[in-house]
Image (cartoon, rainbow over all chains, first blue to last red; front, side, top):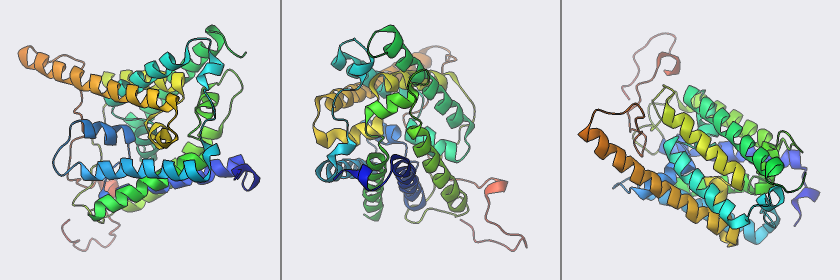
Length: 154
Length: 181
């Protein structure tokens, strides 16, 4: 099923974003938790009694949802490497380096796009607003360097 | 346990939102960050819709004495901007731009079994583990010497019983006594 024949990319973006907002709101409404995925996963690395089940359940839900998507509309995932198109640098090492930075940085910065970008900005937290602006700027810098300075499609 | 059911459901819903919105495609993420090139504003629309939805819900939820299933709200209380926040966010952003993945989409994409996602996810976990090591080292160091200005936040946000700020208390114009949360 090609989603784009049924609903436009803009509508998909707004609807998908609303679903994300509903999902994060539900976690707050029922469990009283911030849906910051880096925090949810990070908390699993130091398991605390009574604090683990809901984290595992949430991650399981992400995976289950991903599996459903993969079975029903696999086109929503990347069909091939994308950072390869930006840079002539070797692809998997880039992904590994990116992963390390994301893992370390989200823990040091206490959040990611869902925690800071959605939940934090949504409640006008100054820390989250600054964090979000920072990681978007840093991301833009990374893409700029990859695209313009290390070769790849102009 | 009901909290786990809700958590699971929220995860599925979150995954659905990510997939539907196109945020599980690294190319779309990097295209958004490509301000100087062929800019794709999709992520802005996604984040905007998510933020607006959460903002509205938060205003309502915040008036409640407690969450529906839990004992208390676990909302971060820190307000000050500090070096770990900025440095961490910068590092995260660099990694995000380099790979086009952040924690959510990476986990949602795991069922595809792609080498890209697995490489990223394993490295991400390694990075988180590295931070744990760094944290432990900092704790040992600061207990031996005076604490350094680059204070490291706890792995988990402090659990607090929220005392509602004046602007967040339930709407109570007549001032009649409210039940104690």
